[in-house]
Image (cartoon, rainbow, N blue to C red; front, top):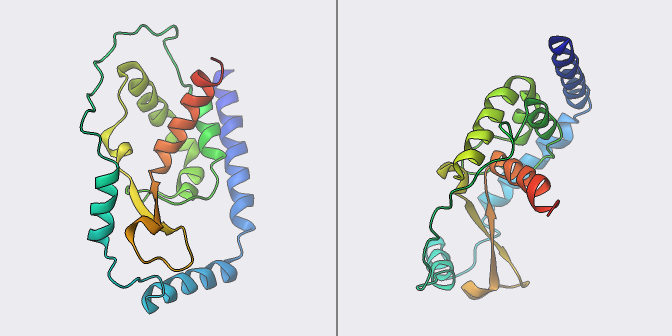
Amino acid sequence: MHLLAAFKVEYIGIRRNTSWLRNINTRKSSRRVGEVIGKARRGDSDVDGITAQVLNDHYAAISTDRSYQEPALKSTALDRICCVTEIEVFYILDHLRPTATGLDGVPAWFLRLGAPLFAAPLAQLFNQSVAAGIVPRQWKAAMITPVSKVNKPIQPSDFRPISITPVLSRAFEWHIVKSYIYPA
């Protein structure tokens, strides 16, 4: 009976992904990519005197806490052996919204399409991470995109840093918040 339920869930996911792909307007999507590439080539977003290094130095200066001490690891006991089930991971992956990819370059649409195949190994990875109390280092790395706070930025403080973490990191964080933070 368990095999039949798993097959049904996989079939529903495949059917949903197929209908999603069928409804994609490729003409509209390719036009958008062309506009973005064209804008990047024209250099419309460049600001005189503000380089990536200047922004990096500015963000590093305002986000450094010299008195920060890393907290000691805590010994905890889990009340459940399996924190995240394969079905939960499948549901998380199957309901991912289109969003920016992080440094790993894995897009949300790829994870959504491969949800039936990725659910089992990712559930194991999520469970190991929760049991050890450690988030994988690759999931902590973020791509920082400066977004202008004003119409005509002239100094580094006129930009807001937006951190883009990997999609899997955000999905795992969402599950932890939903499962542990919200009930508390």
